[in-house]
Image 1: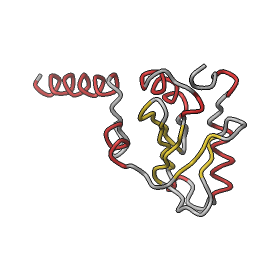
Image 2: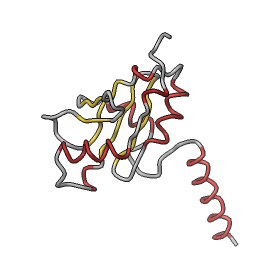
Image 3: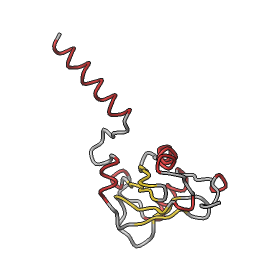
Image 4: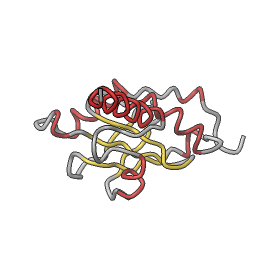
Length: 136
């Protein structure tokens, strides 16, 4: 009986963690993203693709300027980027004009920057026409 109670409480706690956006993978929750302050950068191209810049070590956290999308607030940005994570990467909004992409290099250790950018272009599709320039 005590084992069953423990199992029910544990399952409930895991469910609540998921409801409040906590990742079950260590190192990938919002607080960790905010504390990383990555020196590596990426960008949103004119075609709406997330691209990491050349001449940077591949893997880990990349800072992305999202001001071109003109989000009203961090809540709107968070809701939008929640749908943009994929098998080999995660995305999180940190503010209305800044997001972080986490590249899971261990998933594809032999990929170079061009291969990662091709993957990101295929999986993170941002339709820029859905966004009006900031301030309009």
